[in-house]
Structure formats: C-alpha cells, structure tokens
Length: 307
Image (tube, rainbow, N blue to C red; front, side, top):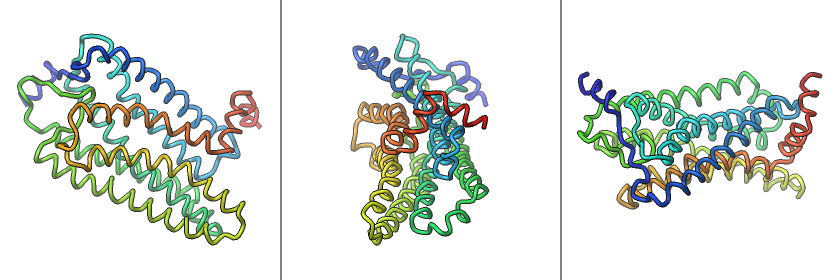
C-alpha cells in the first residue's frame, strides 16, 4: 500500500518521443489532425445511424457501436499524447496512468469481439437471408453488443489489475507515449491467454464467416447480385484487416523482432490513424451512408426524424 501511495504522489514520466525532439512538433500536428478527423467522422456515423430511418438495421447498429468505441478509445489517449508532445512536461499521475490502462484495454478488447459480431451479421444476411429477421432481432443485437462490451471490460479488469500489482521501478520512467502493459514473465502468460481469446478466436471466426460468405456468393448466378453482396462485406473486411493486422503485428510476434522506437510508431498508427480510417472506409464504400451524410449536411435528416 505504501508503494501505491508513493506512486500516486510521484506518478510516471512518459519518455515518448523525447529521443526525437525535432519530430515532436510534426507529431503534434499529426496527432491533432487525426484526432479531429476521428471526432468528426465517427460522430457523423453515430448521428446518421440514429437519425436516418433507412439505417436502422443491425449492420448500422453495430457500426454505431464501432464508431463510439473508436471515439472513446482515441479520446482516452490523444489529449494526453498532445500534452506530452507540446512541452517538456511529460509526467502522468499513477491514477491517470491506471485509468488510461483500464480504459484503453477495455475499449480495444471490446472492438476485437464486436468486429467478429459484425462478421456474424454479414454471414446471416448473405447465407441465411430468410432467417435474418429472427437471428438478428433487435433484442439479439443488443445482447451481442452487451457481450462485446462485457468481455472487453472483464479483460481490462483482469489484465490491467495484474499489471498494476507489479513492483514499480525506482525511476518511474515508461519508454512510451501512453501507459502500456509492460513486458514481464507474469504479463507474458496473461498476454498469451488474452491473445488467444481476443486476437486468435475472433479473427478465426471472421475468416470462417467470410469463407462461408464467399462460397455462398459464388453460387449466386446474377453478376449484379454477387457484386452487391461483395460490396456490402468489403468495407467491414477492410476494417477487420487493418485492425487485426496492426494488433497482431504488435502483440503476437516476439518483442525482439522490432525495436522500442518501431513499437512506438506502430502504436501511434494503431491508436490515432486506425480509428480515423473506419468511418472513411464505410463512407467511401457504402452508398447508403453517403446518401445519409448528404441528408445530414443538407439538414434533411432532422426533418425525417421529426416525422
């Protein structure tokens, strides 16, 4: 308990990109730009999913949850990162570090499960269209979303709590720009179990779902119907590849394969760029979303909502 109290007073020093002071101004603009894009893009997706009657479907219900996750995930990290990049003060309190660790782990783990749930939604829509209304009933959608959130929170409570129980180094220095799970023997075991649950099983489920989807689509005789089916899934598949690809590269390969500096830039891409790409991908690849955005910008969605 005395160690925890001392840590609360001293806090931690996040070294971040201190070794590259000439890059900090550039990185500040980079993080600020992508944070603003993340806010605008994901808020727009949430708004149109709630306001447009045509988008009140399971697919957009889960998409709004994904946007909310990305919004919260980046917000839990970006302000602190910007503060550290702007000036010499690079400290974070013990409580702030703990909160950031719990929040980022919970949101990231939730997204891992939610993307698998979205793959299941696409599988039912294409492979079992006659049963879609039953399988993806609003009550079922809420239950699946709740399972995603609860699993993420459970992982965070276990993983972050074990991390915070580790002995603290005397210098209280973290060679990162965010509070990350450190590399220790205990954490390696926990990380292995977590990786199986969140980084192996969900992607395997996604691959299985899209394998069945591909087989079903190739049986469709109409070229136009095949194109529409593939177009419906391509946005989600692109998000899945970017999200899981980055995380698997970060956490499933041995840390000695890349340097600490490389890890920081990979984390920067994962935490700041990936949440920006999701709304862009869904907007550019989806006609319904583009039409809803046009209505939102022209003020027509508000009138549709009232009627």
